[in-house]
Length: 85
Image (cartoon, one colour):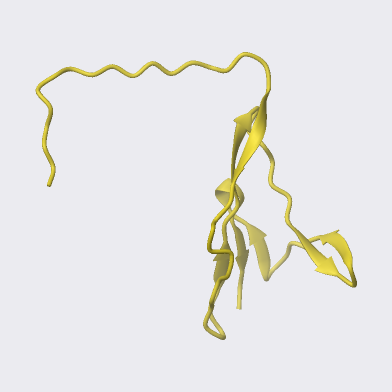
């Protein structure tokens, strides 16, 4: 059900003073299923000031190494990692 309020509202948006440590929002359902041959997109959501950058890594032989971006792996807006078929 949707209702329209008859009372006026007001939103005030302000810039934070100084730096705000990034807050990472973790998906409680970490497992992702995909269909063989289809693309999959992995989310990463963070907030902070200044706006945080996103860096994807993977585990290779027990080491954390940066993901090699290219034809199959791309970072979309807002930190989404797309793995193409």
